Image (cartoon, rainbow over all chains, first blue to last red; front, side, top):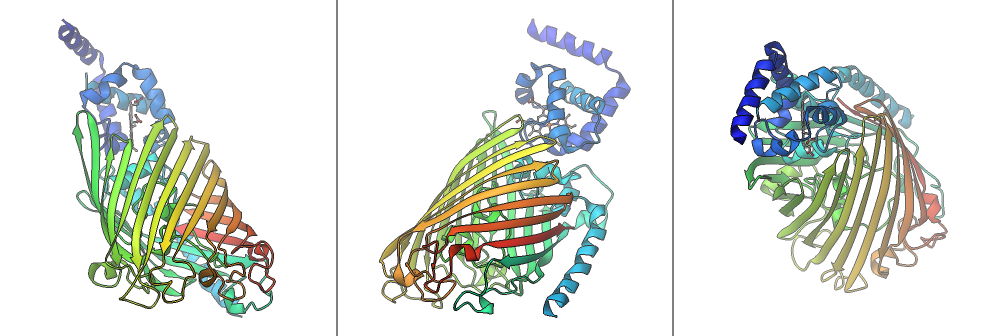
Length: 98
Length: 444
């Protein structure tokens, strides 16, 4: 039951997502996030690591990236990133674990 | 005349560094280039590390940023360093004091100039190596060596990061700024130093070569173990190249370290303990009986790092038991064993990583030992035979650029080598050793 709901949510998300925005999210991720999130936790696509974080909701996660948390510097150490860029990258990251 | 020649030597070097600097805005600049990140990601104000700076070191200095255009600078992780300073001591003309007791006092001094290899070597390995000219000792030498290999795995949803190190100074491998090699105030001055210091407090710096291993579990527990041996032969000699080996360790000296850390939001906290046991030959000897130094230390660090405001604090307490198996027989120590305890505690505030203030309180306490400390020398001796010293220092920082630090430091003593007044028996007071120090420190 739950997996059915999850699958349909994922499908909905895919349908709703604007493909150019998604590509942009990936680009930003590669440029500004991958050096950490491919190498250290929470890693891209690691469902166990992201499960508790998903529950916070996207807005809260974007706010956390802007403020910084633990080893993640404010704005991921890249002051040139806009809130929109960060949101696109977070979208991309969340899509990998949905 | 002499002082002007030196001033002239330093100025063009600093100008050159400033010209080269802006193209590579990052500290240790080669590491910044490797990650494609700003200094601020890894440093509060260099050389203090942020939580991510610690991760970068833990992971072997080998993480790298997005693929970039290849150039010599992005392939070869080489950076440069320059330090120019002036030290001015309160009084240099007390009874018995010779000008040579205050070398270069009041003169501009090229304190250090050299190169770093800072960053990835290959795969999961990297290094931070500093080979430089020391203007106080007047020689080129291997100042710092830390080469490492690191990897990680996940077990039961918890990450283990582990690694191997090859290094030339106990605590150079540490990831916190509360242990001696990386602790405030980061640079020494040319002023007179108190007679006593513990082994862990850099008496073995660039005197030994060692291999170690470390692990970080779940970003919570950090542990490290290493063995060091005298930098006299083979690989250990290479790691200490250029340094005369004055503190010769017999056989192997074990070093260990455990720390707990916690990060929440913009805050991080660590508390830890570390120690070392080493048997050292008396000065000038390479065989026969040795003296044993057993150091046990506790340290802690707190950091609050926001975009505009940074507040950090460090504390470090070292307890040393000295057993003079050789020194007592040979008439170098009056007691069969002595203890020595040192404390350093400091707080720092930085505004926009541009302006900073750091204040440190320190003391040294130890057993009276006539032969060790009452050497009968003016300035350096102790008429009471006690090593007790108390003082504080304050440092103002200004960083016009992230890789250029100007520091103005005042060091004040309320007790020096056992007394406040007439500590050397020749009428010199503790306060006569107070000093003002101005430093320009550039990385490029």
